[in-house]
Image (cartoon, rainbow, N blue to C red):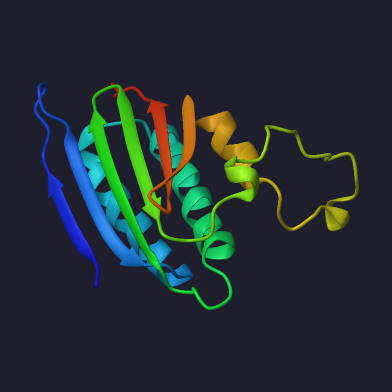
Length: 157
C-alpha cells in the first residue's frame, strides 16, 4: 500500500515528501497529486510547480511503461522529495529492469518538422526531463534503478 510522509519546512529544514507505491498509471496519477499538494506551501510559481509535475510524471511513467514489463508489471516505486525555498531534490527508486546499457537516453531533440498528425506518440520524456531538470543522475545500485533529480526553483512574490 502507499506510504506517505510529509513534513513542513522552515528555512533550516526542507519539506520532505516520501512515498512508496506499486507501479501503475493510476498510482502515478495519485502520487503526483499528493506530491504537488504537499509542495504547495513552498510558494513556488505555478510555472515552477508545473515543471516539477512534468518532470516527475515523465520519470514515473517511464518506470511504469519500461522498467516494469512482462511478469513484473506492478513493482514498487519509492520517491523521496526534499524541497527548500530555491530547489527540489528528488530520488526515485524502483526494482524494475535497468535502462539499456544502464544509461538514460542521450539528450536529442525530436524532429518536429512534420505534420501534427504524423508526430510520434512517445520519445519526448527523457528530452523533457533533461531540459527541465538542472541535474539528472541515473545509476543501477543493488539491483535497483536510482534516479536523482535536482530542480532549481524560486518562490513567487
